[in-house]
Structures are given as structure tokens and as C-alpha cells.
Image (tube, rainbow, N blue to C red; front, side, top):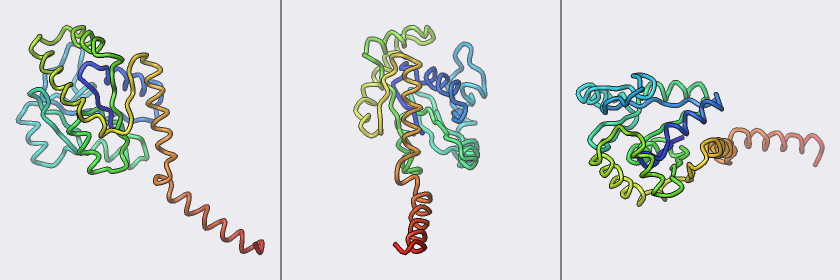
Length: 205
């Protein structure tokens, strides 16, 4: 599953709430070249890398996707995601638009969610409330949000992040419903179909 949204909309907080309530999800940790914010730790919020280290990951094909956003690289390490998928876990990628579309290309059955604010004034308040970014950076993030808003229809669902716990449960419900889609249950459908035919023959139907 991919979760995207405007900068400041609360994607990270929403994902922490979701994974804190539902242990069956594996939240992928992205690599980035941006500087850590206060309280962030390498290997917890992000893998913080230099530009040279990040470009080495690109060269060695160790990223499923990557993008440049507001002057910094962001990308998804390949090894962790593939290990979790092999274990049958739902992997959540919190990534930007460009990376989300690359995931859709590689994994056509991926679920793409876009997190929206209840209104744009709330978004601005959240950006300013961080207290970690200059006015120029905030303006750049708002300009990027304008561009991203033109691509929202490429996602499967939107989630309005107004009430944190309600929004987390809405994401959980969407993931659960995705598991019930017909195209994701071909093996079970085939087994039931075969068993029905055998039962019909045995009973002379």
C-alpha cells in the first residue's frame, strides 16, 4: 500500500497511529538526503544518507523507487519491502507522487491512498506549526502541493486526516476491503469452484 499526501498533512503521524493499533502492517522506512528534524533518528523515521550514498543506492538498484522532492532525494529500500512481502505482510510505503506512480507500474495491484487535509488553512497551520522550516521552504511545499493536487485522481482513495484515530481506522478498513477483491482471491475461488464440481458429480446433480 502507498500513502501519499501534501507536506504537512500528517502522513507520518497517521501511519504511526495505524501501525500502533494494528501490528499486522509493516511500515517501510525511506532513505532520504534531507537533514533530520529535531527528535528524528536514523533508521527510525528515515535512513539519513548523503547525496553520494543515495546515488550509490540508485546505481546498485537497491531502491524500488526514488524521487527528488524540494531539493532532496527520497527513496524506498528494496530489501526490506521484498522481505516483508515474502512473509505475507502488508507493506505500507509513505512516499510522494512520483514514487507512488512507479510503485503502481511495478505492482499493479498496489493500493494507493492520498491523505488530504480538512481544508487548506489547516494545512498551512500544520506546516507553520512544525517550526523547523523557513518561509521559503513552506512556500515551496505549498507550490508543490498545488502540483500534486492535479494528480490526486491517479490514486484509488482519499482519506481526510481530520480526526487522527478515525482516519487511521478508515485506512485499516480500506486495506481489509482490498484483501477481499476478486482479483486477489483467484486461488480460493478456483478451489471452491473445483470442489463444487466434484460435489455436484458425487451427488448426481
